[in-house]
Image (cartoon, rainbow, N blue to C red):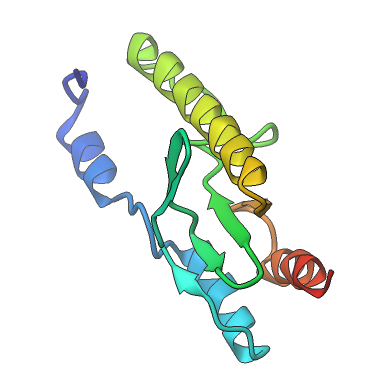
Length: 136
């Protein structure tokens, strides 16, 4: 059950948050495409014990890339629990982190390589890490 929004502005803000095609994700995808890499976007992977939806997927090389938002995935630098509705947000954010951990485990158990990046990271740095993984 979701808590009632504290203000109409907060409600508009939360509705505007995208699940995919975020600015950091688009920036990384543009750079990868410009470098000649082809990938699948937002592809659902049905793995034993988990259903995972990475942001960027290199199917042949079995590489899954996630661009995690600092807020929803509890970035150690920028992540924080909001002061309002902490009874909702603290467990919600904790479940997100646990879901990420389980997704990583399921992917690795299925032979995939996982690359996780924070939305605050420079796209060039993220692409460099992805390319390094693809080169191995």
